[in-house]
Length: 111
Length: 115
Image 1 (tube, rainbow over the protein chains, first blue to last red):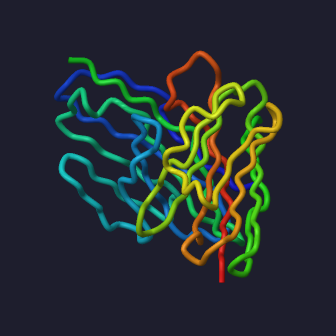
Image 2 (cartoon, each protein chain N blue to C red):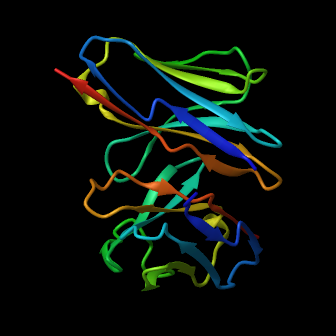
């Protein structure tokens, strides 16, 4: 059965810290891996990763995919209180390329 | 383990046809969200229910889309008539009571193709 596992489930850090969020997967017909940030009603798209070893970067956020070890990490450097959110990982896979969602990591940044 | 289910997983239809998508929220959850995801627009919120009552459907084209919750275990999203621009993946998500609105659990989605 296809599955996506995120860790940790929750994380509390102080402003300025660097955090690393993990997403591992076991799926058939992998196509892409996506990261979302959810702080309001609708998640906000962050990154789509399809190739191993190529880092995607946006400001203080970066992400990389390892298709051999079947995981991705999302890094946030110099965290700010506005980074507090749930970070969702989803993998596009399967015969119909559906999205398989992880449970999310709840990140809390304390001032 | 509990999860949101959606049917069908994949739908191909011709322009003008009616499309109905179904969602079964996680048992005990009282909030249900419908989203549409396209490459161009990303993830858009279409409608949001709490305790089966629609709270926000401002993101939904009213002339052709309708969303309902006939009971606590079923949410439906209907498009009539469908158009090619409706082609997208439609996600349903549910959330438990007593939590903030963004604690949601997403279903696998329905991939809709309108030709």
